[in-house]
Length: 303
Image (cartoon, rainbow, N blue to C red; front, side, top):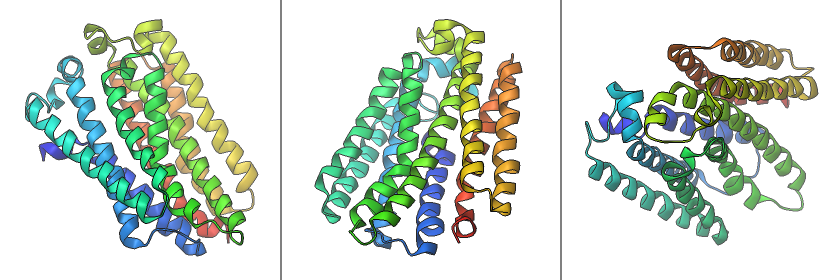
């Protein structure tokens, strides 16, 4: 059970859910040409979650000092699992993930795609050991990697299946994935900033230089508030541009995506305590889930 918490199983389950939704709620109902058969698609999911889990582990290893202050009751590495055991698990998951990525790249005859997994794995390590300490840069990098967990399905399943006949359709559906990846990037970016504000005391004692340490808690809150407006504007644009004739979809996005986004932005603007920031961070997790569940609506949107 400790290992499940170490790899942040809730985040892992969200990745699995999103990739399954893309394949079986977005691609299959429209009979989109895909490159991976069912077995290889599940290997792609396994590859993604192995590398993501490894990234979560190395992040916790480097966060031992800050976690003793920020969340001592939730510490796992150094308390419930030894640092050496955690590092061994990190290595094992990386080897499995990158190895499967190598196999998948060759199976679809796109050998250079293997470098994507190597770069993601390396970036997760660099983020945990170095970039996380830098104002805003680390937040942006980890948010890009979150977005990649969506785009990777298109890269391995849609792009290799493009022909002269289906090119227009394949590109259309890849653009849908890009839209969701941008949404995931923005939501995660706001959440990362909120977490930095929430954890400012432990990060300061560990001599990190996150955004709230560099410019102050209040200024960082205003930055987070400003960025939180971007997904709101993006969702409004999406509704007005693509969903204006789909009442079910409009209702879902207004109630379950736009409403929570507006609520969270207001909360950011008025937040002052660690408890309030934690509440906002949890809220953005829920918004991410609700946003991805909207993939179930596409049989109605594109009918």
